[in-house]
Image (cartoon, rainbow, N blue to C red; front, side, top):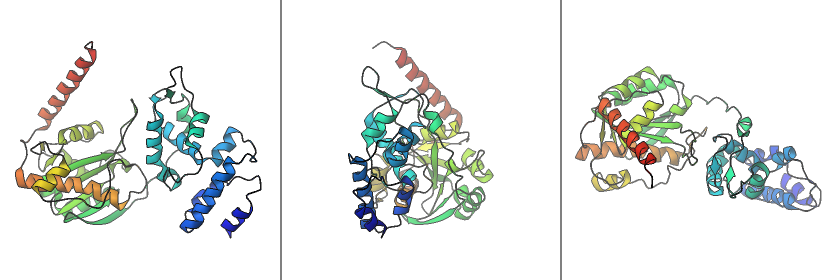
Length: 344
């Protein structure tokens, strides 16, 4: 009846209120599409009354979504339309429960409303964008059985007490080596803060996904001790960089060992261990979202599990102690700074 009422009201000067959009997710797909399509048509109709900026935000979800994105960026930073679209695409499901493509309203209108271009036509994050930030609700404590991924029993948790329990039950802390990986929401703008969302640890038999982005520091005692220890050795592709990144987040990491070869982890898993992930998932994911899809979780788990398999078959390039790893990282940083000072 809701959709019928909307269809009969096309001639009225009414815009679909924003508080109805979350409710529409409970409707059948055809009814949802019809209602949202009507809302978009009513928005574009010349008979709709002109709205001020505050009311406009309530009626065009693109404006609210763009405010969320801009509030997370450094004020004054230059950003392209393509970058804005990508970041809004990452956050759309979290904010409105649907993809950016399915969202009614206008991306261009939202950009025009909230942002100004400089003399070169470049867009910059408004200096007041931080005022649009809203406090996220506290995460719901949860532990989830993901299932078997590449033959490994896999769990996800954001509960500190359960982390230590799962480490003990899985035997990860007693293993000689564990696959090690991190996931974070992609950054696209210079100066944008990188925040680690997920930590993956795995052997060939078990995998633990820890939502450390939803946890206070310091991390749970058993997890902190395992990460800081030299055994188990943390193995993977680009593992030294991941270890350094985790240390920048306040978590010490012990010895690491880079997998041999130059193949990507996915290629190495297929060639060396005959493992392949076939059910989708992508690193281009909002790893800070309150809920992650099973496809995303399986994708993340596969990287750590594949690293454990490849390492068991062919070993690594040689164990690198924390002091050597940090020294190499400092040298690379100094080299990059030196190249930056060198005239072209």
